[in-house]
Image (cartoon, rainbow, N blue to C red; front, side):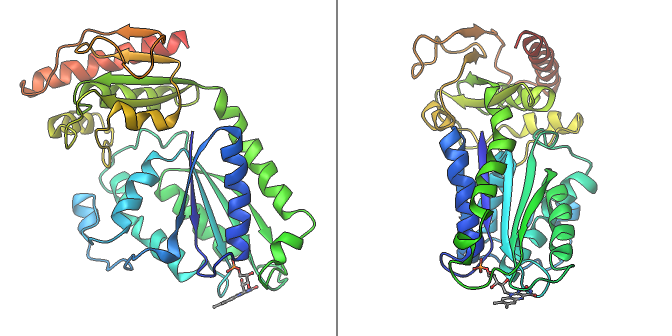
Length: 321
Ligand SMILES: Cc1cc2nc3c(=O)[nH]c(=O)nc-3n(C[C@H](O)[C@H](O)[C@H](O)COP(=O)(O)O)c2cc1C
């Protein structure tokens, strides 16, 4: 399970950063893969409201936000941590939030569904110096809307008042334990899912579709990944088109090698699409051979047939796990 932490404070070792580390450390201890993005250190330009994302589904600004879009799609849990600055999140965090309009547009303007949307979780950690009743209201509303835009269910928040100076969060009587406890609560049920690795040669078509369908139809029961024995540079554009015909959004997916897929941990099952003998990195694992012909270079009708066949195979597989 991949947990992405977004740290919005510009202060080094600030209160929200410490709280987020407490959450992520516990997630990692439990066995999740974690990544922390220090948003304030990234060069991310505010949204220019150019309207490109509403027409084309992507943001044309070429900056470090482009590295964040794929991470937001890969994450199964996104934890947003921010101090309160004038009753809202920091400007740095708000910049990321506004740029997620590209993902909002893919869903709400172009009508495409990210396969991970149904199961992805979003959680907010927030701290503020004062004790006002409404201190976190604006940030919670913004976080809810952000999580919806990036395709995550808002699972709630931990908020702490009267946290101002460096180190205040560590001396709070419960905050660090609360963060670890919340990580355990949210992550533990997900860790018992079976890990399924779909493999083909280029990881550009068949294995990508299989992993996406498995995520879409069974993300509560399986953790699905895909990889290639000789990964291509990009996913197959015709595959993206036929998936979009079914409203499935394959944006931000890249072919990866089996070595790179291994960062997600040892799979319980390997499903080979049919063009390689076995998965060399995981000897001794059960392997299913699906023997599906490679649709690369074939007419779109063949790509559609392959898509439908893969979806059916995935649905059959999900009945057995
Ligand atoms: C520009 C700025 C604006 C702030 N606005 C608020 C605010 O509206 N309400 C509040 O309670 N604290 C406010 N604070 C205080 C911070 O939320 C508080 O010091 C917090 O602990 C900082 O967290 P950090 O260490 O993670 O950066 C503000 C601080 C700064 C620097």
